[in-house]
Length: 198
Image (cartoon, rainbow, N blue to C red; front, side, top):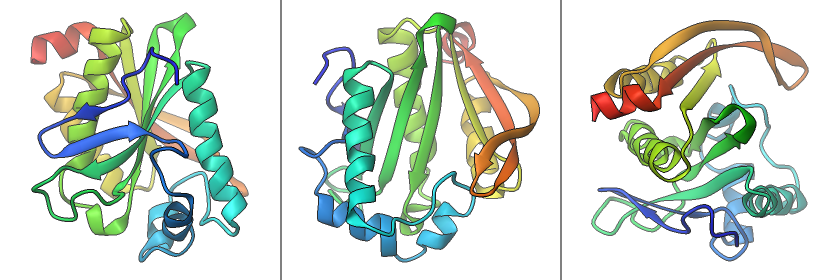
């Protein structure tokens, strides 16, 4: 694996490790991505559907490795730390995509339904912003959500405000979701805002 991204990130309640075949069991990941309790709700506002074959899941992990090695995306599996409820289980997946030409990173995450409401999204966002600004020397971190996804909106607004960022507005017909093109809200935090808020 490329040494650009850290292979382990620990927060007060979470551990992030690479989204690859070494750190993620394929069969377990397939069960989660295809038939986990609440998977239809998890994917409702995501640009992907529950996996129909284990090959889809293998390709998901393959992309994590490829993007990591190509230095395009630090893709991680999210697990609660020891001492947390469900410690060691896969809570979801996250990543920081890097647009090196624009000195910008973009955050993404999805969590299994039973891990919703624990504040994990904001906690891993703080860790990935630290990675973006303090290790990768990026200037802006962005994040977006489907215009109808109120759960993501609340989580994102909370951590964006905590780190001094702002909502840039609504991007109309921005991202393909299944057979339609969805509107998304976009938020940004600059390195300077992050440092002031810290």
